[in-house]
Amino acid sequence: MSRALDPETAALLKAGDPLAAYQHITRALGSPDDGLLDIEILGKTHFPDPRQYVLQDGPEIGVSKLGLVQAFLVARKHLADVLSGTKHLPDDELFALTAVILLMDPEHLTAANTRKRLIQARISNSNSSDDIFSIISRELCFLDSLLTSRLHRHTKSPTLWNHRRWVVTTSYSSGLPVDAFTDITRIVFVAAERHPRNYYAWCHARFLVSSEDRSTINGNDSKTKLLPVVQRWCFQHYTDTSGWSFLYFLLSSFHSKTSNPDLVRSTFENLLQLVSSLRLANESVWVFLRTLAASGLVGDEQYARFLEVCHEVLQASKVPEDQTVLRRAVDWCETYRRKNDSGGTVVMADAATSS
Image (tube, rainbow, N blue to C red; front, side, top):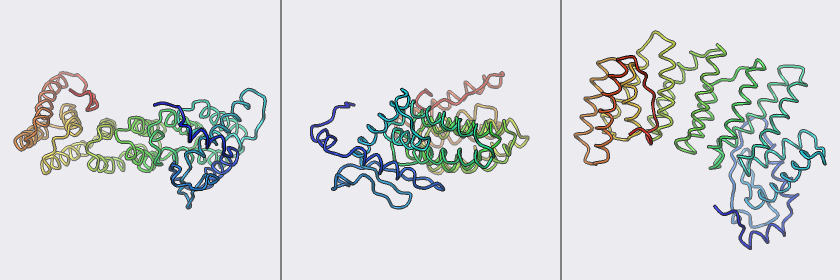
């Protein structure tokens, strides 16, 4: 995509007031401390007055695209001056200007790392766990606002998800647990809906589950609560292969820590029932089914039912591509189930690379 500006936009940028845009946008981004912002970047048709930069109704914020460019130029210049040592700004101002930069460019690694240094300095100077909790909560609130808003690039930004991972790790190292169930259902689910097949969001969900396991704080309790809601999410978004991959991860990790295999088998049977009733031949669904059938986490009875449902859907399907998906699922499963019986391991691949 070209970064060149059309003549009209270039003229508006020159005629605008970048400092005013910066002040309005930083004020809006820093408004609520107790909830997530819902941010959208809007075109000039929403802002007939060029001196208006923000539309706000409570936590819902519409930011002028032109105003954001102007504010970004101011913020980037301030940050460069601070990093070069020619200017000193208070921490609050640095948090504000890096927020503008990340709203404009979610892959701005320097802005993300600046926020890390500020957080580390504040935590090291804190005298109580309440102060640390407040520092971490504010950062998560800002990050989660970007990750769950209708901002296409932000919901799948590796820089933002890695920064969130760092914040969660810092929280654990400070002795403050993070609720994996709440984060997955409140943040990951939304980001995955905003941007389907969101690899980075589901990798973060894996990290949250694994971190809670290592912390030995309610790990199995969270998994027990997560299993049905993740299953329901996948049923509702059955074309999303990344969601299915996380469900497989969850089933595998849960199965390895419990003597109750019924949870895995019931999930498998419930999906087979859904697929049978709807005659689903979607590749994402069948990649999950074939992998679970070959994994050894389900028994021979469930495997026989898998073959039966596959035959039913194949007989009902009139689409050659769907028939190919079903035949490949059976062939793949039979091959790797034999390998698994011989001591091999089965790893779920994304549907795009499964054949």
